[in-house]
Length: 382
Image 1 (cartoon, one colour):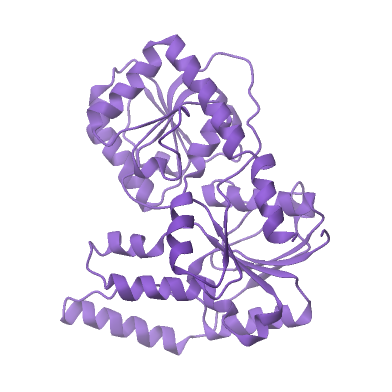
Image 2 (image 1 turned 180 degrees about the vertical axis):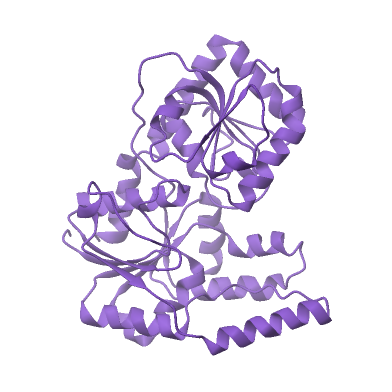
């Protein structure tokens, strides 16, 4: 069934391709266009200054930008309460954030009341309660489950949270929906065991195969990432622990906001933010994903595989990637072993070529648009 109308809640600027998660949603918009769906976006003014390039203007019908400028007494009092607990009693309260204010809920409901949507897609569990109202019973409600939020809070609080209460709240919010898009197989399995209301679908990061260009690479290693705390922690670990095991003749390119957090060095090239990463992938031999925290599949790993680049990653940096296949992804949390994977790939041409071939084959079979679109059809067209 084509020509379906969809309202997407997405709090960021989907057209800003300097952030990995935006790539997922831009490709999702392209999928909707290929299926002749009409898509409106409800987004937030504080996170998003949308000025889409003319290339992307035909991917959406309407963009509603919510401006939360009115003073929210409930949120203010809660912030005061939590800060007081932390300062006076040295108790920090970690709960599952609910970022959907009463005013936002009213505005969201108003948009839906003016236009009959076949489906509503919420991009983050922090805004799940936007649809917690009998008014939305006639719409098919879809949640994109891209993170295990309870685990993220557990890390942030150094284990000092009420895991049962937070996990139960996460389950309650998931059960508000009819269909769930799980970005990783582990989250698909975990939540499908506890949540009885929705149907679960595995929808990993997906994209078109990278277009390879002729020419020898001039970067041995490539690190791509925004300047979020997980990436900063990861690059610090790499340069403090792995870098000294590598020869200084190895050239390292760093692209994205994370460039501001790497040290100076003759063999280190800080590329900064780029709208199109195709050139830097084509000019690099190996991609690195040295993360020590975070959850959800990493867009930069899938991007690298789409260009046939072998990837050296930590366990966290390879989340969602099968460990049982020859897929061009080499995993190590030990700094010396991490560096050994890099050296072996760069020192043996046959090993490198085989790994590159496996990377592209794994991408095509698991993360290509053609493969993932089949599951998306089950969610949005049936």
